[in-house]
Image: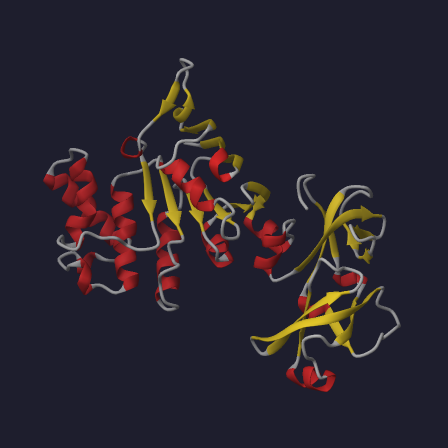
Length: 360
């Protein structure tokens, strides 16, 4: 089974081309309004694309069919399952009956539907709760049942819409572990804001920005060397777009950023560095750092056991640079919004990567 998507949805400015190979999980990341929910709605059959095609396992779900006619398969006939943020279990049915509901609705006998439900409840570790009602379950337990229910219909493709978003910090890891087990060998599209979900569950990731794919690739590659602003935000890195030079990158403002280059001069690219690599000084430190900028402090906020300084360099007026410093260092510098500081980043701490011509 493979999923091939080449769709346009003009009303929301969406234009995507992507493929999910057989048995793989694709994570879709992006800021609010990027088009993640629209993509899921198109795949589920809740929206009809304005152009393009969606093909699942060689079957056209939307778009021009083999006979040239416009095709649109309704949601209930697609063989696509959906797992939402909320479990949405039927409150009047037992756990077992909730899971058996889909198979029974598709014509399976009561005995076979029950056997399938028992097998799937065992797979998600909920056998002992089979006779309970949804109101007797915790949030994590209910979501496990929802996973079993989604799988009971034997979908050819599973859609997961922020499946851990409504869970507390203790339930989320348990459900993530269950999903990691049950998704093995199954094709799925996972929409999430959490990079941990992508790392734990997905094979590939695409990052959406303004209805377009800003970058795609293996999860660890995207999160360790992001080419998009949102990818960098997820990875906790500072990202500066521009044009690659022989020894770094030149931004649109004309500022040269020295770094370790992976790409050819003249290509569009991004310079990336960690906030922990940024030193903050009251005066220009001079010396060896080749990247030194006077900047204005925007804000200072707690970030774990350090303080995160957000500052806007005079040479990069459209970009905020993040720096992680100790509380003691912040007190010594007397950092307040509006204060002038000097930032320094060693060239060896900056990575420069090529990116698509559509980025930036």
